[in-house]
Image: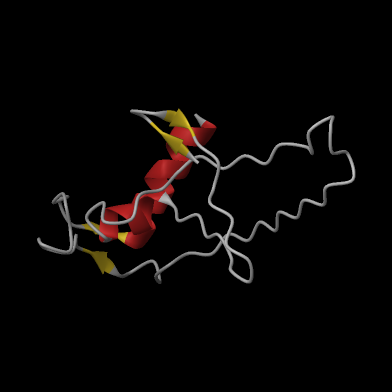
Length: 99
């Protein structure tokens, strides 16, 4: 996991659980209660080449395109974003990424 203040951190290992990375739109919807992070998976370390590592990536739109996304208010939400329609947000994000 990456935090702008502390840099890269190992994701906590909890047996029998899954680690979920959320995207920017879900972070916005939660008012930054849950933050999106950059995802990376490193190969096993040289001293433990037999370590098994599994990373399953699945992308899913959290809402239909016509859904109005409004940040959760405090105390759940920690930051207020202006409202946006899910489809408009994702289209603009893709336009930014693809140039």
